[in-house]
Structure formats: structure tokens, C-alpha cells
Length: 99
Image (cartoon, rainbow, N blue to C red; front, side, top):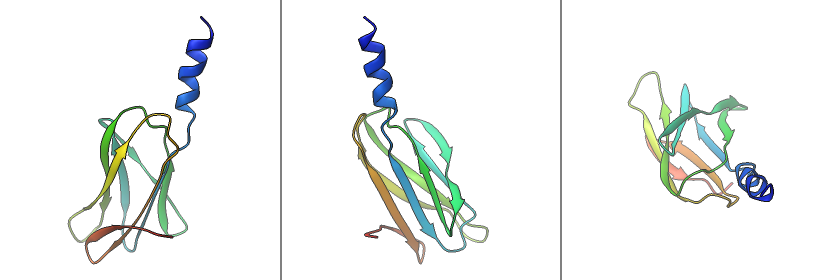
């Protein structure tokens, strides 16, 4: 019986990374599983790690001081999978980053 809680907790420890490069952005919020999590600004980008606890999709909402926010769509996510999502915002559009 102790094994089941340990396995469930193990799924929560899977690191999933999120990164957005956006010149002039003031914020980036990850919206996933019905929850919003602010990403940290470091070295000219917004980054964060979060365990995936749902199946579905989400978005990263990138805020700017002088124009409307830009949404970076997160593709399908699933619990327990190691996933990395990288984006770059340019000219009001969000594109998946290859770097």
C-alpha cells in the first residue's frame, strides 16, 4: 500500500521546462490545468519548471507595457512525460524556438 503514494508522488517530480524570449515583455504567465503560474525573468527570458498534473493544453500569456499580450500555445501535455517548451515572441507573434 505504501508503494502507490510513492509512485503518484514520483510523477509530480518530473521536470517540465517552459521558456519564452520576448524583447520588451514585462511578464509571462503559464496557464495550465486551470492554474496560472508566473514565469521568472532571468537573462533576458522568462523561464520556469512545473510538473504536469493534467492531460490537455495550455498557453503562456506574455505581457507588454505598450501593446496587447501575446499568447504562446502549449501543445498537448500529459502527466509523467518529460517535456520542454521554448518560444520566441517577435513582431507580436509567438513561434516555437529551435534553440
